[in-house]
Amino acid sequence: MEIRRHLPFLLLSLASLAGCKSHPLTDYRPLDKAGMWSSNMEELKKLNTSDVEVAQVVRLKQAGFSDDTCVALVAAARQYGHPFNSAESAVSLVGAGYQESQILDFGRSDRLDSISSDAVMLRLIGLSDATTQVILQRHVDNQPVLSSSEIARLKNTGLTERQILDRINQGMTDEQAEKEIASRNRARNQTGFVRVQGRTPR
Image 1: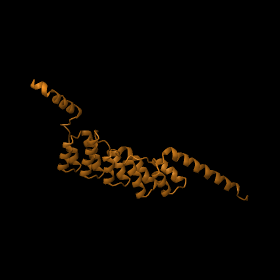
Image 2: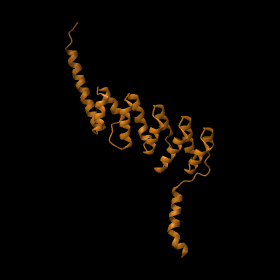
Image 3: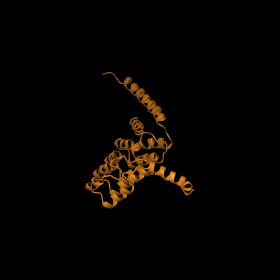
Image 4: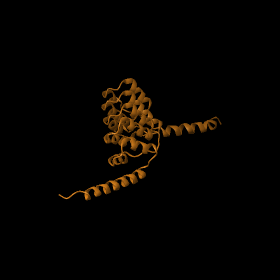
């Protein structure tokens, strides 16, 4: 009777253990070689970090990330129920000039991988830091936002950064942007055609 009374609790405990993979034999020596403090390695051990994740953190350390950011990124992945495997995304963002605090915000919203390519492209487009921050914050807040490729194409049609930002704040979609790009390109081509026709032959 005693066992039967505790059976639901035992079954729940077994299910929890089955859903949480244990990595008791993880080799943390690569982190020591990468220069991570022992106290931070202990934090990673508490997070039950796997060998694959250790390799990811080593990649972060090699790129110059602080110990605290490394641990926080792994912890953020844990909160969303998946291992940390976004080192390359984080490294590409650092290479594009983003700060660790910004990268950590992306990780804490579980958007590090999905946002990295657009974030890097925004730097290449040449937008100001203020505009870039507005766009990325919309990504983090899961608000409608134009893709970096459409932003670049709008800019190529002659729209100013302010005009593009106004369209983004109004919720313009990629499909709507595509229509405006086509319209502006048609108008530009027609204007160019008229100018050419109006030239005086030599």
